[in-house]
Length: 451
Image (cartoon, rainbow, N blue to C red; front, side):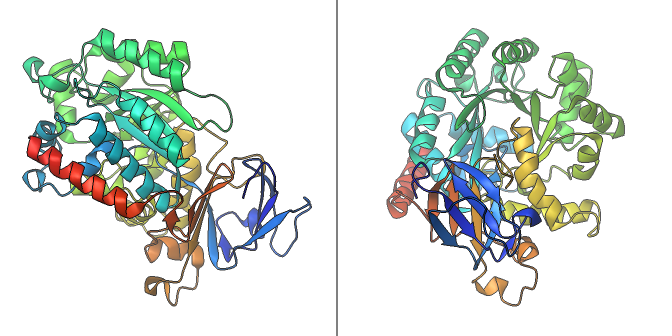
């Protein structure tokens, strides 16, 4: 379909996550122009139709936190069976050798994997910069444009290395002037504003244990001046809490507020270890939380208080996190993990499949500061994910929407971004998947050899 030439009706889906669009949606010029009630026909004149009677229709899924480069170090033996801090110190020695060609193929693989899982907006937190990785975000922008996905790319940073009490090696630590200058350059070069933006840039100092207080404060000022969002890891483990108390004399959230980050401009990765008063403060500020269930389980980090945070006023989104702590980039599978982990934290009656779909769509969009994606209402972007239920795992399922999570959907049959089909019959459009996998495997082997 060429959306500028045709008005397309995605017709009569088998099921739809939004009852107001049970009869499908009409797409024109990269937007949804009509949500069709069950059994009705569109009021809008139609040029073409797509029969969705065998598909479950969702808004395109929105990922809120990832580390694309980590697809090169999945299931890495020296890092297995470790908690966060020793896991990081083990892998930093590998990641310090990344070059731009390796990052490019890692980013492409991560974006393609996300796209195939029904994800239409990808987010990445890249903070590893060395002499061989000076233009990492530029590489990612080019890759996202070529694949036709929406990308929320964050200019991460690390300014405190091991010589100064931080975790990362000195080879991936940058001085603060370089970090801020590069951040400003990227915003000016790539950040798009308004509805339909395909590429956005946010500022993302890595964590309290790898950047200075001064850099956190300067990043907050730059984000406000340039009107972009802020992102970082926070309250992921009890070790982090102990580190902040030892180094700063305060808990992680107190530190976040002290450096000017406790605002609605910020979304946080993980956000696990908050007490009741801190949850209330986060909600009052409107700070978003990127929930990373698989990573939290793999590293034994803890259980995020998703419902409490959401009830307090926090946008809660869903994220796959890095592929070295997950170890996949599949947002459909992450929805099932979020459902199961949420029921372990709360109860089956309190965390439903509808809740998790909301986190993966509208909640994630809100974390990124957007209301033009994550839904099926007229005026929103035509970002759609359509799933078939024709695998053995779905046989006998009575509720198609619930089956996506309970039976474990993992691959979308069709994915549309901004009115363009980017996945058809389960395959990414314009991507030689076999060749991509071969290049990715070669890059992973080379990175491991360079350690």
